[in-house]
Image (cartoon, rainbow, N blue to C red):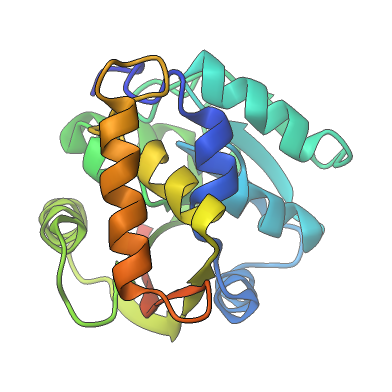
Length: 227
């Protein structure tokens, strides 16, 4: 991937992207010792990382994009148990065998799978755990279903797979932020942005009820130990 795909989208990303159910975080934490050290790779603006931090986990938050990393700093500024790192999935810059678990929330499809697997083996302690998390539409629609399956099929051998309901309610403002956060949509400075927002508003008016748009999602979790 280009590390610049989300440049200019960090604020919208932080406002509009869905979070994760606490039950999903509790489940992930149950898979590792209480003092496990996490590397959250492709941390973005810290939506998932913050939930790990709130559990008291020690986390290295790895993010290559400067715009997203700036928002990550704001999100995590009150958490002394998180260290923010400028790095990629393929080259985290973390020391050899320094972490117990690697988490990747909604980002594996951006990685070079073979190079990332090698980096996992380098930075994980023996028998370390890799956890991949995706928010997916409950009805099985959308391009992310295909991308997530392609990436997880390529990376994992025999993962344990579980899912948690994660319905999201969007206000108009949050829905526009969500759409703007997508890497293939116009940014506010683009000439096409105003017309694009008109289309987004029309869709919101069509599909919302009492000013709220309800989207049924599931948080799907894949986990496997790297031996």
